[in-house]
Every structure is written in structure tokens, then in C-alpha cells.
Image 1 (cartoon, rainbow, N blue to C red):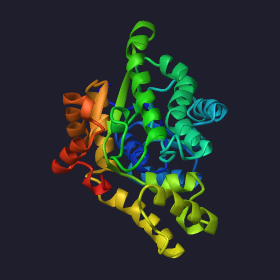
Image 2: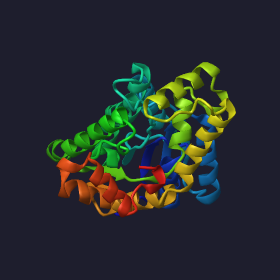
Image 3: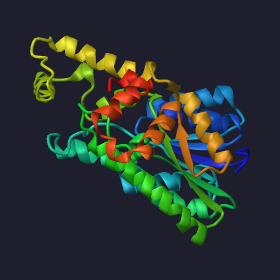
Image 4: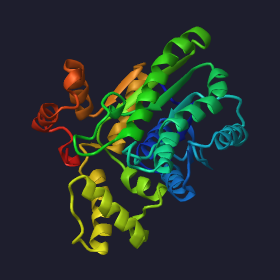
Length: 321
């Protein structure tokens, strides 16, 4: 798909981050876009940006929780109605959140929520919109995995199970689709996207999705957080509640503001990969370095020397590995 002009794309997580930037880039290329997100407010901001920058593109917004299969079916029906169409050309299963890091110590609700969004969102999105892709003359499904889809860690001091498990599932599913589509719908192609550290609002959004907006944390929640961090060797018993809240905001800001690749840059790389017909799209220099290192010595990927080499090569240093 060398051109997006005159095409129709669906983008989940279109309210912020890479989803917003994908929408802006697609609209600028003359592509109509239907965006889905749980936040009507952030989607309206994306829509307004596109209306100002690319008034010729039609951008519609749809409140939908990707982890809910029926909401995704309803989303697909709304796209058909709002765009007066019987097909779409591009599906970007992009929505994601973090959290649920430990399978052993985090509660099941938070773990399942992360897995439900990061994997279930791709599955539900694919189920709901695949018939519309197949109905097109030319289609492409683009699923966002992560470097955590081939390296299940954030370093040695932080468990990262739910997100990593989900992103491994996304990677495997998309790779399996390559043959499946080739046999059953050869005009539809699939790509898996594996970004490194991208400057997005995912940490802020994840706090909110888990009911842990720093400004609204209860005393009981802060006590639980202190206990969890103490179990990881970090004593915050002398830190005030207000400083705890401020620290969480600063953490989320730091993730967004110190990333080596911006969301806009990531979107451009993804769309360049789609135009080039790449099924495997690494995003960011850090993603290429990590991919190279894991392939070179996978048995050492979770050992201290591996992390030290990552740091020596300047990869993920902003994330405190």
C-alpha cells in the first residue's frame, strides 16, 4: 500500500500518543480515519487537530473499550454507518496500557486488565474489523507489539509479566496471520510493530486506567504502594503522601519527555514500514539495538551483564534500568 490517499483507516488508542500521531499522519496523506478510545475528550482533541491540519480528511471518533468484544463489534458497525462504507483498508490495533507487573504479588484484576487491553484489544479489534478488511480491494492490519514482545523485562528490579505476555501474544498472532492471510485473503497484509521507548502518555494513562491517578490516591493506596516498593528494596516510609504523588507525576512526565523517539517520529516510521510492505517494523534505535542483542545471546537476556551492556550502549537509560 504505497499511498493512503482515498483509503479508510481505523486506529485504536487514537486519543493520545502514537494513536493520535498515526491519525494526524494518515489524515495529512488524504486518508479518512475512524479512531477509537475510552476517552471522548482526548479523541476530540485529535479530531480538532486533524480538522485544522487536514480539513479534507474525515475523522470520526468512537468511544470503545478494546478489551470489551461487544464494544468493538459496535465500533465496527458505527464505522460502517458513519463512513457509509462496506470496507476499511487499514486497521491499527494500537491501544495499550501498562501495569500488572508481577504475576505473584499484583492482584489479578490489574494483571487481567493489562492483558485484556494489550492482547485482548488486538484480538477483539481483529475479530470485529477483519471482515471489513477482507471486503476491501487492498487491506493491511498493523498490530502494535513492543520490544517487550521479544524481551520480557524492564531490567532486573521490576517484574513486567502482564504487558510482556500480552506483547509476545501480539507478535505471535501477527506472524501467524502472514500465512493465514496469504492463503485465505491474499490482498490483506499484516505487520507487527515493535517500538522501543517512545514519548507517549502511557504511564499517565495507565495510572488512570488502574484507578491510581496520583492526585486522587487514597491513604490506603499509598500505604500499599510503600509496602510493594519496600518489598523491592526501596524504603519510602519517610516520604510524605504529597511527595509520593508528585513523584508519580514526575515519573510519568520523565517517561514521556526523555524518550529518544517521539510519538510523531514513531508514527512516521510505522507508516513508512507499511508503505514499504514490511511485516516486521522496529521503531527507534533502541529497538534495533535490543533486537540485535537478544538475537546474539538470548540465554543471557535476563542476566546482569546483558543489562550492563544495554546501559553501556545508551539503551533505555532514561527508564532507569
